[in-house]
Image 1 (cartoon, helix red, strand yellow):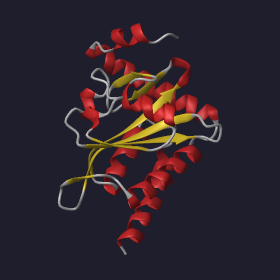
Image 2 (cartoon, one colour):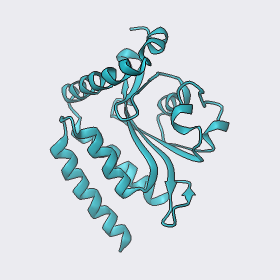
Image 3 (cartoon, one colour):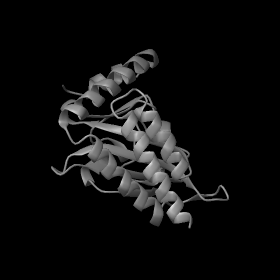
Image 4 (tube, helix red, strand yellow):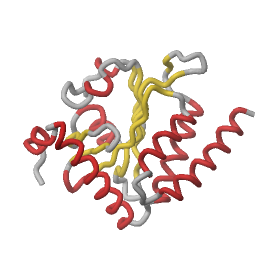
Length: 193
């Protein structure tokens, strides 16, 4: 019964996501609704921007250079990565992972890959919680939900013009917030446009 209820929530979520597709509410709708399906400390939707060699998140207000840290590992491998104790992973980056996962005990990175094998998005889940509020490693139903969400994102943004428009919006919003935090200068030194 619980599984059926989750998949009904997924269906409702997809309908809301379709309505917000291409709007400023898309990222927050996505992240908030996933938290209703997969209880965790934090969920972040990252956009991969190959032309700028960066991964960007509006809600985390961060840019990560392509190839850096655990996000870079998820893109290079192109498949789901579950990391228990992220700080001990060889790909862990003090500069890019530490601000979000330095105290995390478990992280999941779900690349959203299109038919051309290009990573468009990464869904990051930090510290999955069970019904008692204890941190657990994501598994089973979590993977099914994430696979469904990945397919939903691909379906919503199958036309490149829609993806480009969403990326422009994310970059514009994120850049504004990052300029106030002075995080842009170190990034620009590492990114070659």
